[in-house]
Length: 348
Ligand code: DNO
Image 1 (cartoon, helix red, strand yellow):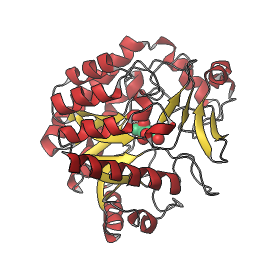
Image 2 (cartoon, helix red, strand yellow):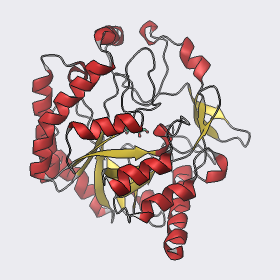
Image 3 (cartoon, rainbow, N blue to C red):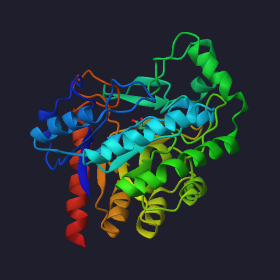
Image 4 (cartoon, rainbow, N blue to C red):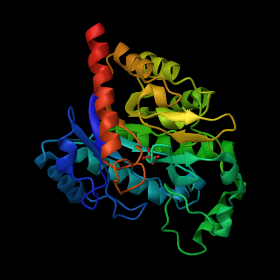
């Protein structure tokens, strides 16, 4: 298992120098943030980022994310143009010597929470999803202050976009995903880029929008769209794990050990409440609903050698920064996971 860390580029207050100082750190997961969704990522820009990362003694272990244009998810006639662009971006990423892309197929909103700064008893702050608050929100009224989704929609654009999804149910979304996967996969196989779809977060429909990358059955259905070692998963413990219906350890055993389709591991802990709410906690097992020991053990059991990264952290020690993506708590998470890996490996 290779320890990596998500870095948001040169404007990230978490500097590459700091990341490199985390014990066990090997690689960076990043993206290009100033290219509009749907445009081709130029080769020289990808190479420049890779060189910056390497100058800091780290490797560029993968891209998270190359976003999928909404027209592709909607299945509009313009999708072919955007898929052509996506394919060119895959080719450019491959040419720069990078072989892993994380992406998602969530309509409109990526990860969704009701509060980014929930104050815990110890004064730290966490990302939290409160079911009752989310149920009362109506994004079409422009009253959303949620993270994880693109705030760049032009005014009125979000309402228009949501309207376009009115006719898209889960089956249509599956069809559009299938169309996309069947077009990109032959190229991924040719240039040897592993695609790792990120599960929906949370893994259920929100605001009436369909969500399909949610469960064992749906992950299986997804992989069967195109059975290839290049068509794989980002197994995110926190996203899939915020419902008790997903047994994370068994998902790793099946999709990892048996199928060899987990290309990237996102590792974090969440505390699930009975009403469907959940809170993001510190990484160690005792704070949340995930059994981190069993999770790491399941990966080591088949010698998973892909990248993993600690995921969302709390804000601690007065740190200000991008919600979920500060330095301190993620670094604690990384070293905790590193410790589990050492212990479990020695036990073997
Ligand atoms: C949340 C992340 C996601 C992820 C995308 C992948 O913090 O794990 O935003 O990057 O869903 O496309």
